[in-house]
Image 1 (cartoon, rainbow, N blue to C red):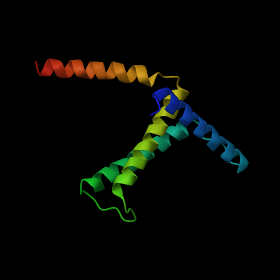
Image 2 (cartoon, rainbow, N blue to C red):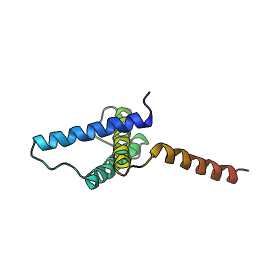
Image 3 (tube, rainbow, N blue to C red):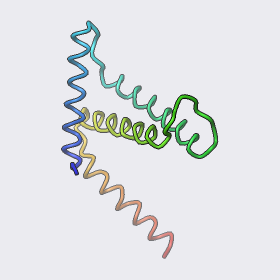
Image 4 (cartoon, helix red, strand yellow):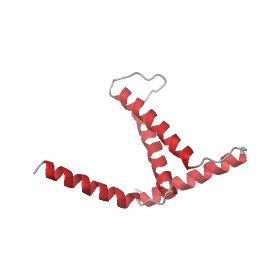
Length: 111
């Protein structure tokens, strides 16, 4: 399994390929705001899929909800990695720190 740094490098490589495709097709490359808006759109799709999975709404045209849910979560992860790379954020470090804070908060509540 790849570590977070390897996943980030892969996400960035794909982002650069998108830039090449856009250039070849005469389109301006996406800026960071475009990636942020795309991320919000993916989160919206994710929410609809979760609602369908929980039988709160119907989605037509989706045969395998689990596959669609996995795909959308992966899209959200890709966007997260691209955004973090752009802003030069250490997600691995921040994730560990955040989990420590949450764990401490839970420990206080249940002690």
